[in-house]
Image 1: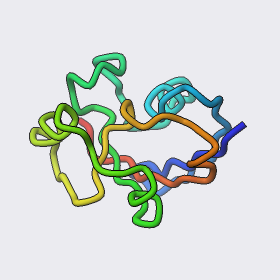
Image 2 (image 1 turned 90 degrees about the vertical axis):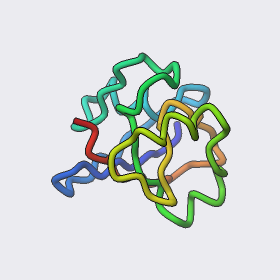
Image 3 (image 1 turned 180 degrees about the vertical axis):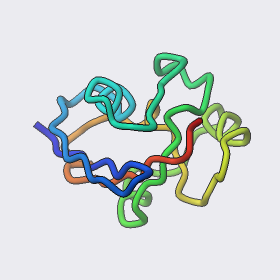
Image 4 (image 1 turned 90 degrees about the horizontal axis):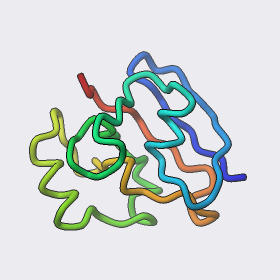
Length: 105
């Protein structure tokens, strides 16, 4: 199991165990992490799983691709370390990653 830490808008840390091969949106949604809506079900056609990846992890997972970049253009309060969690796959490579949930209302 891979550990993923979500920090919700209230500052509460949600440390979860995740199976490799899933994406970070699915893990957050299945565990009712506040603020992760996942309206499109993970098809990268909305921005309701927008989050900020801790800087030390952002370099490891890399920047968004062209499709994700287009969706992030409509995300509220976009930052340099913004990612859509549906586009980040759980793997041993990201064990311990921390993400801060954006305002996805």
